[in-house]
Image (tube, rainbow, N blue to C red; front, side, top):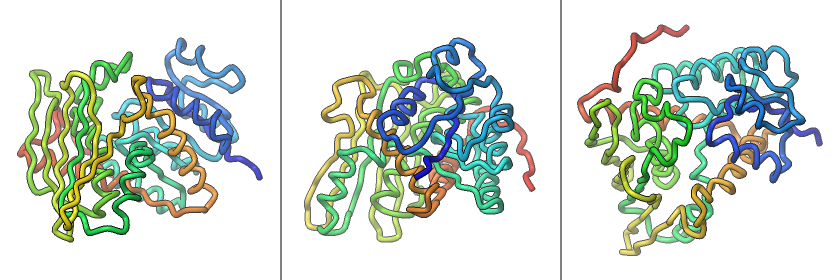
Length: 314
């Protein structure tokens, strides 16, 4: 069986987990890497061609797909160029920093018949999967709480763009929100935002947020986001109609900082290659999560920080 040929665009703090996934899963071939930073390129695997511009990579490399791991504000232009070039795309969440841009990417994907896949790595977490299996045959979910709390400065590493609200798309809602909202949708299906409170620092970065969401079934969900919590907490808690209470601690069994990401990103790459091979359908859930981010900011009464003029897309 011929393995899909994939290029990795962006060698920031999360790229090491993708690189490890290529080695551990053996379900795809890494055929090129791209980053404008020469130091990061120098540290890339020695056997693959290196590029400083993603457009050069798309022109020069014989590949089937790209993994896009660049700062959030670059997701839209890089994914747009890749889809236009006929390359399948796996993009790190969020799909884009603006719902308008995300909708355009979804249209491009449909128009070109090209895969657009968003990397929601927490859906591959072993504890989350175990929780879903435990409650699968039980009573329906009445309420669900997702907590996504950390100190962002510890997680950002050299990628300081996280703390620039224009480049990040806001703050904890724009960046961690998609993962949390995707987990809500994983358990409850489609949901809508009913209430939101967002707290920003002096630079306009949202540091804390609480978001209430409701499913058509009547199940209620609460998402708690915090970028200023000492340490780290990532959990999913459920209450079932029969009174059962259960929880998944996404960090359980992983004392190493970011330790759970090793197996989660292996899951991302396996799932992406399954979509490429037609073994599972292409479901661009990244747009649904992005719409919930936009709804959260709108419900809070404030647009995303420092908005630029919207660009009309064909």
